[in-house]
Image (cartoon, rainbow, N blue to C red):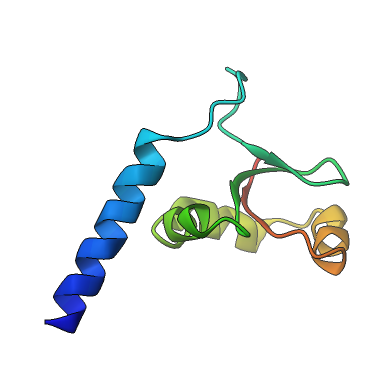
Length: 87
């Protein structure tokens, strides 16, 4: 019962974030979060709905695990957490 309720809440949050996704007007990329070092990400992991979307996006997670941009480490040190780096 609790798992079903939790799943329903997650589904609503995912649906809400898809319906009201922020459009930054950039047609060449689907990144929506840019850190202070200039790295562009698909997800802002400080936003709960973006965090949920990132957790169900294996391509973004794989891309992040293969990324070697040193600016990402600088971002983390500054407390900026993006996911789905846009290369």
